[in-house]
Length: 180
Image (cartoon, rainbow, N blue to C red; front, side, top):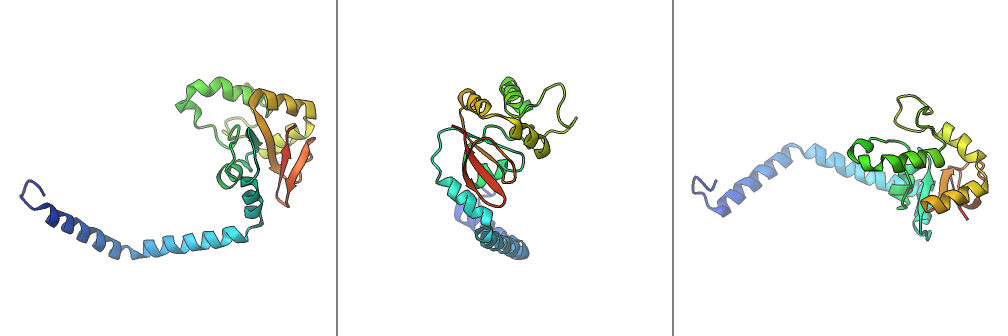
């Protein structure tokens, strides 16, 4: 526009008109976004797990949360708590190769994964069934060792798991334990 000597005001007006016309042509997308936003917000407050994680936000913590594949995203996104390791995906390792040794150490010490023999071959996650057997067999002293080594203060797991730690909060879906 500047090469053909159209003023700035005229070029801004033309671009605005194009954006408005485009928006009018695609109004259904905006309605769809609005409806989904309202639907998600309403359902979020009706969900009993939302209250559980809303209370988790107010929990004073100083360390990381140990989570499972099914609790990682809830802990981080809804509970706003730092997690030690996202066990549902390890696709970040090629982008951050300097973390390989630390991740392997966490996988071995916390999750009991042997690097040469993963729970499921060629699967970039750790299934909850595998994690459950490891966590339920850990003694309190092992949890205290992990607290010191990795600065972990809490454990968040599905509520039907039997963990040898002090229970802080539990609902029908999840349970939070304090490592002390």
